[in-house]
Image (cartoon, rainbow, N blue to C red):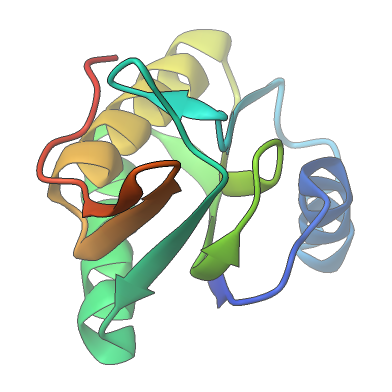
Length: 144
């Protein structure tokens, strides 16, 4: 199980591959479900050139660990990875990576889906978008 919060760009598939190798998962899993979220260049019908994601490190890490623990209680996961960007983010940059490993697909898929929905709507991140008409704090997330 791993949580990564980074102010630097990351390559999602590299993170997933490194985690698989470093976790010594071997071949005990039969399914890996992943979600990779990237920054769009628009939101609410407005162009977005950059965004800044702010957070309180201890609060955010504690919340992501809580989500991970809940997921492993709800589903028979072998392992889980959650990685999230903070700071200045440009369009097409990866923002979030979630990977769930389990013996069977249903647990991995359901856990991955639940994790991104919980993270997206409840995790303590604050988003400010740079738009042509000025900077805007985002008060709500888009629906899944």
